[in-house]
Length: 142
Image 1 (tube, rainbow, N blue to C red):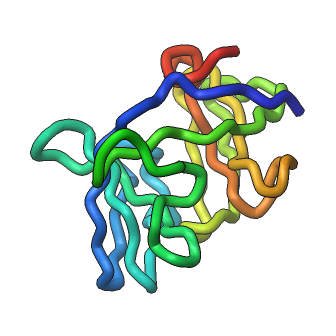
Image 2 (cartoon, one colour):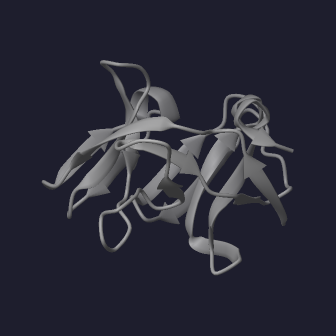
């Protein structure tokens, strides 16, 4: 695995302290498994000023989303380093990941990799997801 630094700085999130579920089948693949679950609430990553991208589980004290650190102002966060499994998944593959949001089944439509948030300087194998290579190259220093 390879550790990479993020380019993502001052990213907007809002907090939802109520339980919620987000249906991600439209963007992650039409699998009945692709629902993000947040039984204790979550941070909602904003795609823009009015649209939610996805949810991120909160850290233990709700001071930041898991894998993020407080940024330059309230509600803004910087992405912490991640770890990349260097095996590249190809279009047509189905990748199963059991992570903090529940079980996900990613239907790969373009080259992608499995990535993990960092915990105590190591990859947290219980906190992974699949990232398209185009998004990885846009958001991380690889």
